[in-house]
Length: 309
Image (cartoon, rainbow, N blue to C red; front, side, top):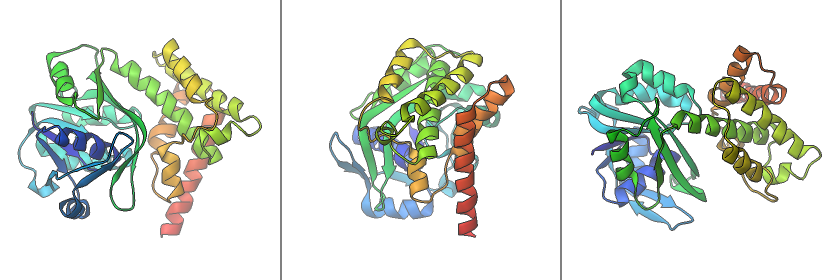
């Protein structure tokens, strides 16, 4: 199966590079500056599992003419509209679109544009980013991709995709309950992004300050309440996993949203924190910590835009 990876940033770059290394037929759709960098330096990955580099096949939007069997979408949420317009020629009658963006809003956007029959649910659990040299840096050892049919079944095409993605560097699992999985990831990310951005600190540091742990779990409870009211009550193993995640002493864990703030970049705040808060309002659920975190990042965005202009 031919795979088109949209972008070669942290997510697309990492998973796409692993597929190329394993011999899969992968092409990256990138902008001109990234294309030049990849032609010159290759696609380089710095990982706890061992560094490696591949020489990727690349296309720019004007060169994209034919459909692909798989379109792997790992762009930032604020780039999705442009990305959809760019990769539209790659979507044929049997194309599977696998989005591994954060949050949930993108599922509706992709479905509206391309039709529900093309769109899978998916999520990635990998902590990664691009460094100043354009290398994909994997910060922690996790490297999971979970995906499935949004209506919940292990279809033949999902099982075929699972086999394709089963390569070194990717821990892959096809799911019969991908929307439940995505909601739990949404809760986890909203908690992590909200609290680390609000306090501008890692989980380990937050745990050392007065009311730090209480603040983390106050936000966690708010997000769990929204998921439950939406029909996706977080399961006990997830609750236990996140309880350990958010109480690990000296943990360096922080959201990629906070790393975006630290380098003065655009954030996905409205796609994550804003969407969770809006869903809470529509359900009549009070979320004071979430609302404060959303306001905090929104204020940062206003300041960033003023500074840029």
